[in-house]
Structures are given as C-alpha cells and as structure tokens.
Image (spheres, rainbow, N blue to C red):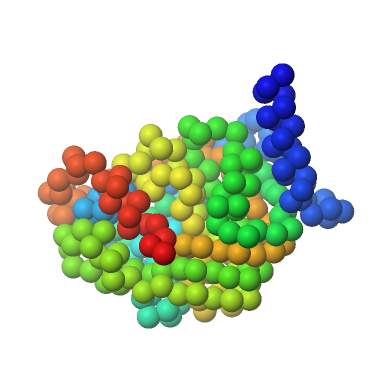
Length: 268
C-alpha cells in the first residue's frame, strides 16, 4: 500500500506541471530503443589538470548531435546542440567552432528522446532536476537531457584558459559568472550514476546556449516557464581514453569527488 501511495504522489506531481491540451504528456520509448553515450577522457583526469587536446570536433561529430565538454587548455564551455558545436569563453563571447578544434573532455550522443514532459513553471534548478527524476526509471544508467524554454533567469559560468597540470578546483576559483534575464534557449547535458563519478560528473550536468547563440555557459541556476523537458536513456557507454602525454603520465588514483563537486557547483 505504501508503494502504491508513493507512485500516486509522483503521478500527481507530474500532472500539476504538465501543460494541458498540447499533447505533451510523458512519452515512453519502446523497450528496444537503445542509444550510446560517447565520451572522450574522464572526469577525474580533468580534475587533475589534464587539459591537452585529445580529440577534434570532427571526430566527435561522428557520434552524435547533443552534448557538452570543454576545449583544449580548459578554454571555455562546449555546448553541442542540433549538431552544432559552440564555445562559450570566459569573456562571455560565443562562437561556433571549426572542425579542427580540440577537446580534452567531451560527451556526446545522438539524441532522439524517449520521454518528454512540459512544465508550466520552474522556480529553480532543484525543481527542474526533481521533474527529471520523475522521468528516470533507474539510478544505474546514463541519461541524455535537453530542455527548451523561455527562462526568467539563467546563471552560468565559463572556465578560463589554464596551464596544464593546474587542478580544476584551482582553475574554477577564478571563473567568471554570468546572469541573464528573460532569455530563451536550450539546456543540454547528462545524468550520470554515482558509481561512475570518476568517469563523468555524477548527477545532473547541463550547459546552456541562448536561442540566438550569443550567450551561454555551464548552468548553475535557472528559473523559467513553459519548459519542454526531453530525456533519453543511454543503453551503451563508450569511453575513449586519450593517448596524450599528460593523460598517460597523470596520477589518477586519488578520489576527486569532493574537488569535482566544488569545481562544478554553484558557489553562491
């Protein structure tokens, strides 16, 4: 009886947020739908300062059209949406990068969502992730995520160039942050199981790009309305390990969980 009550509570919570009469109720994929998350390098390598370029945008493009990451020397945030690769730099500028651009860490997937949910209102990032939690059916696999909306408020940051070997937490201490108001755009990213915390950022990791492609960054906080949430389960996870000198010589045995959380989170 307790399980039934919990399930009914979750269903009621979803119904309160779903926009009526638009055909945007939750859509569940067929059981044989299978997607792959393709990743270059690991999160713990990035935390330890392994910033040497290991793959080109051209090579990433073969594996999908939605994702995120960073660029060689930690030069800004990578946002991949609809097959376009954007760089959000620490001066706030946004540009679409060339095929030869290099990345030390990136994750990408061919996005065709299994589930969709429309939200009337989203007061903060925690509310957004809670609604995604209702769509997830497991804590043990990866999920690709996309949100399209008009946001009342967006808070982002963008990493600045750093020297090889400078720990991520130290590089993130001087990252500029940006606040945008009344802006339409897209969030892209992934949910990663806790057991994979040395490979990717555990939990929710999202980057933002505005509809006019002029503003963006790593998402720290958001507030919006008429949000379209899309999710796909990643049945396969393919990690390509760099053969760069800095990766091969790095000491990756340390538990970097606390440092990663500190570097990726909202400091306010």
